[in-house]
Image (cartoon, rainbow, N blue to C red):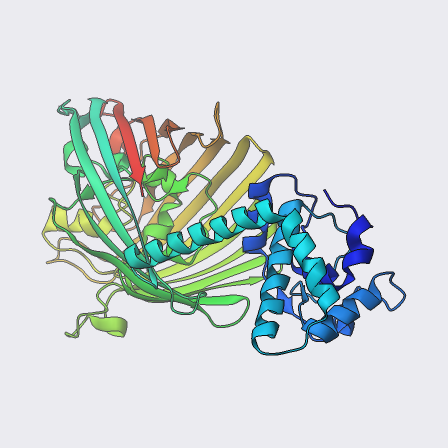
Length: 526
């Protein structure tokens, strides 16, 4: 390594300035580290030595720097206009600087600009001394140019990045009953979910996101007779490929971003769910309930969302219509079903966060989790042949705390007050429903190996605690959700997650034996 007062400096003062652009942040000792550093640190040409903020006229090398700038304009500095002359320098970095100065002087000679012979002689001597380093540097640059040319010729798009995942899910019911004592078929099944994601940026700060998806993994609702067994990676599409999500995200200020949801919008696009186990089915929880507070599933799919960060405060708000693309009466962006969300989060540091959520919905109530009765629009259609119209107000609190690197404590609570807005042929009267849910979670990051994740979830999925609708009772029995999984990272792109879900008194009916669902989820990402 060359030290601060390099012995050859007095003899090569005119070369000192080239070192500005290649001084490392810390002493480099390996060729690869030095070259990587030079490729990632942008440099800025200076035209006057006074532009270097940390070079004083009293500095011992000040005249050398000024001479080089005035003579050859061969000096570059850091983007913040500093010289950092006290930093150590490796031979590889010096070779890069020497090469830059050689190129500059060669250009000046070709243009007929007068160059001092003594400077040329010094450069010749240095070039001979660093001949090996310069040769290797030239080879490295040539290789990089070839690699860049290859990538440009073979890249998917200049603005779009393609990524995706494929999930193979082995799942089945190991025990349980439905409909008040009816046996559930114990037939293991193997299905898949595939997603292709197109991430396009036009400015470097915005994102046009489109997701294609298909799959054939059952949600197990029909098989188990309850929404409580819904898997987080379910994709009951019968192998039909379709556009599942399309939105455009862009910043409007330094602290506020906006999401324009064209199709398939979800509240977690622009809202922090404060659950370390929320992997949207690809990773983390293996159940839909364990993924996030179910009130987030009360959602439309077309509209707008925004998220702002102001110090320790996170604010999210959004409006999503259920059938925003349908211009017929009773539908559309503002005349049909919709939900609106407002959330305030407090995140004082990376280890703790808490949020308070409010959601108002019209004709959107069902979450796809919990008892049949709590999914009242589905329930009314099953019982009376028609989905009743509803309005609802939901309130939630979510929190996450990481006391240690290997442990994250979390949980949530949710309450929904739903009101029916019409009767059905005199069979279903108007009234209200009180729907509750809660959960406590434990996450174990890097369990036994970096990249792995263990998880435990205990809670109660949405249930109707009280109903004022004539003829519609409450979910009187108690049903617990118990879930455990272990996500093992074979590589950065392959993860295998065995897990088990246990539901006591399925559908909040003590007449049903405990439901046990086993899964092995394998996720391939690319």
